Structures are given as C-alpha cells and as structure tokens.
Image (tube, rainbow, N blue to C red; front, top):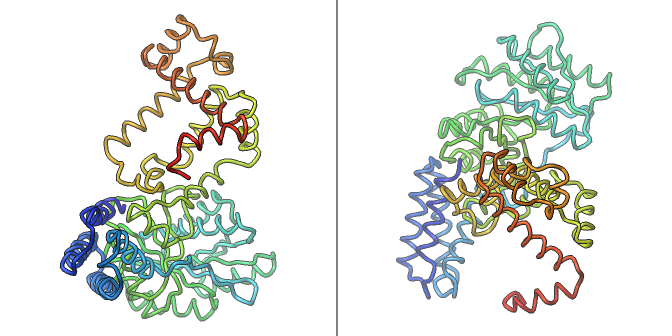
Length: 445
C-alpha cells in the first residue's frame, strides 16, 4: 500500500544524490517535494506540516549543508521525524494488568476488520505463551458473535459464547470464566457501528468501566484514509485508547492513515494486519516501516521471516550438505520454496537495501522465472533430482514436455544449478576458500 509514497520519497532523495554541497534553497525544494509526496499519500495536512517544519529546522541548524553526503543527511532527518510520528524508534509492547486476567478491549467502526483482528491477536498471544479467551459483546449483531466464534476456532483460541445479555454482562461473564479456567488474558471484541454515535460511546464507556482493560486498542482500516484518522481521534477523545492496530496494510490505499493516526491521537501503532490469513499479523515497528518507505530496506525483518519459515535443524542439514558437496536439485528446489515462503518477491526485495525500486516488469520477470524453475524441477523424477548427471537428451525432452517449457529452459536451469553447486562447493571447503574469495573482492575489506 505504500508503493506510491515510497517511489515519490525515493525520487526526492535521488535528486539530491551527487550534489557536492547543498544550498538552503535546495533543502527547501527537497522538503517541498517531501511535503507534496506526503499530502498525495493522504497524510493529514497538520502532520505533514509539523513533520516538514521539524526537518527543516534540524537541517538548517546542523551541518547538513556542508555534509559530504547531503542526500543521506536529509534522508536521515526525514527518517527520524517519520519514525517519531509513528510512535518512536522502539515498537510499543502491550501493557499488562497486575490483576489476572489482563483485559484488552478492541474498539473501532464496523467493517474495519475488528473481529478478525481479535482472533489474530489471540493467535499471536497464544504463540507467545499466553492463554487468551475471546468474547464478543456486540449485542446488536448476533452474526458478529458467530463470526468471532468461527474465526476463534480457526485460530485455535477459546471463545466465550454465552446466551445474550448486555455488553457489560457479557464482559463480566468472560472475566468470570477466565478466572475459573485459568485464562490470563481476555480480549473483548466490542460492538462497531457504521459511524460514531452517542449510544456506541456510552456502551464502550460502560464496558471499559466494568472490565478495567489494560489496553484499549483502536482498529483502523488503512484503506479508509482520512476517515480512519478522524475516527481514531474521536474514539481517543471520547473513550480513550492506548494504541492502534492498522488492518489491510496489504491493500492498495495510499498509506496516509498509517502515518497520521498515531500523530493525531498521540497513541502508538502497536500491531499491523498484513493480509487476510490469521497469521498475517505482526507487531508494528516504526523504524522498519520507515526504512522500507525510504528504500533503506529492512534486513532485520527479512531475517525474522527467514527464521520463522526455516528451522535450525534444516539450516544445519543444508550446511552439512554444502560442506560435503552433496547439494542436489532437491535441495535447490527446497531453497526456492523457502524463498517463496518469505512472501511475494516484491515484498522481499523491498526489505533489501537499495532494492525497493526494483519493481514492475523486473519483479514480474523474476516471479515468472522462479515459477518456471520450480515447475521444471517438479517434472523430474526423484532419481534425476538426486543426481543431475543422469539427465540426458531424452530425459530433458520429457522434463520440458512435463513442465510445459522448452528443452532450452531445462538446459538453462541445469547450467545455473551446476554453477551454483560449484560456487557452494568452493565456499563449503573451509576458511581457505573464504580467504580466496576475499582476495578477489578487495573492496569489501
């Protein structure tokens, strides 16, 4: 969803690149473009104005104009201010009550993804050793309570589902069950409306007073733009929120809500929903998000994804095969599939410094090549994947026919695999090989 904003911001800093020094007028021109980029991305005008003014004050007041790398100096200032607007360098963890169970109250308008987010949060907490219980207090819409019971079951999280009562009674009933069954967390999915009204706010205020939540999270649909910002401001003013959860960050909105909601309310974005699946949910880390927006990559995020999709035992087994020169086409296929598990190729590239601008046809071509390679290997027999040397002319024709490609495609893959295997064999032979590699790349030392 941040693609347009990212491209605009990266374009601004490309114009500064290569300048020996910057004049104050050049800084003003760059910040004017930053302001336009933020406004076009639907960032709140007040947030944009304050951010640009802070950057200008710091840029003129420091040695940016005399810097040997002025584009990097301005980039760093813009990054720092954007991170601060999103809640600070460090991610904001959940706050827990001294009493058990600790209550998390989910608020937001109808259609924002609040119920699904409740199940996602429950699943995320369960994976980290908590024992959550979910409950819906939407007495106006029985279908909402049934939806939470369904998605809660999919997430593998217990759902409290008694007979109908008032929102306050349902909340207190969930607390009683949690204490009886040993649940340490109760996540309350409150009622939503199509718009903010007095009845909704009165119900939320009563529910908050009865359950005494440690966290009141506002679930904001990132696709609604400025409406999400206004609603977050109103919920914070009338009910009081402690954090924000952004949903549908995988959508095609301009991204302004993510940059505005935290700044307007003074409350941090704590979580982000990045897809429809229940595991597409993660803590929101401002520094990583802004780094990706500015084309600086997110290597830590990529490493975290890799650790989640590949176990230590698998990594050690692969390392042993490399040392023994036993790397096969089967292993090659497994590694390509691991790459696919990291997410769409454009998302993976965006997490690599300097690679975020590689989009469009380049990424599409890479996706096609990856799919073609997997199709070719899948068309091979187990014997052929274990020992590529047995793949002669007739086998290559059969493989090409099986994957819907050409013999040239198969030949190209086998050549690439042979080159990769040769390189891995050299790297796996010990420190001497690494020293030889370092000798060929003196610029890295």
